[in-house]
Length: 375
Picture 1 (cartoon, one colour):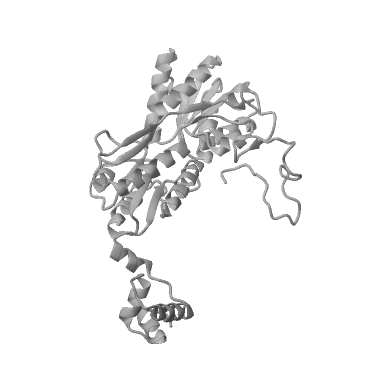
Picture 2 (tube, rainbow, N blue to C red):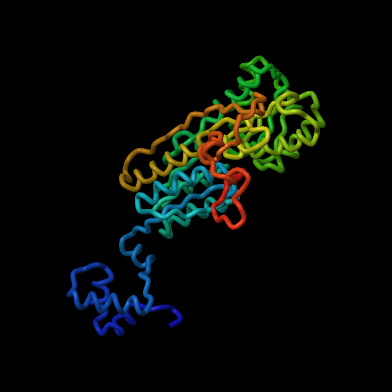
């Protein structure tokens, strides 16, 4: 039976009509003897009810999609960890799309909402083009955007305040006496790149520091790009005394290059990242970073979407998550006294950890020890 059992084959096996099988599988009132026969035949044949057919009838799939630029980025992992349990509690499954920040892929995901494979979409695009906005207007299911969109766009929207975040970072570096503060940014045609670049320029002006093109390097939002950018900065401006990095991955690449160049962090060069991912706490030295509330943005987005699914006619809402500066050793020079627990984001209490919890599980032990990294 190449295509698997059907209602017809269940009816034949149970010795009842197709209509009787349909009533049983749809939970409609039927004689107990008929129910028993149909369920026994269905189990014997390995029948699984067709979810697609069920969704066509109810016009609901009980699925929600989350489209992000890079599924390996810890920012999006933090969002997923918030979105998944909220959806599960509400009876929805989560479908993930990693678009590699390709606008055409994101627009294709928006168009595919017309196929009704999900009931709603959360999307976090790095770029918002006119094509994005036109497709959003015609979207056939509710959409929530994580990230900035033009004012007046009629879509539920959750934003980070990265401009204030950059200002917090530069105020901190300035207070430490740093005056040659370089910026390592991502592409300026992205929402975060444009926002963080503009915020850097504004913060320098407000702090009375001159803008110096030689202290700005544009790359991409990955560790390797951060390393290349900082190597170029050091070659061009070896006198720089601080780095403002547009995300934590760039900052980790910066730490790699500074270490290889023999530059002490923070004594010679102070380093600040953005996003405050788990990687920031696990790096050496631990990384001062601006938290943009990745988890909070994920939670706010899924709550907006579920509310929209219940009340489709309400006005679009905007939620802005405030930033927070988390100071660590890359600017303060002080490491936590104890190893860091990425689960609770606090130092381990060595008096309560079981043997082997820090160094790794003993051979044959199937329990896993905490490891640094994105998870």
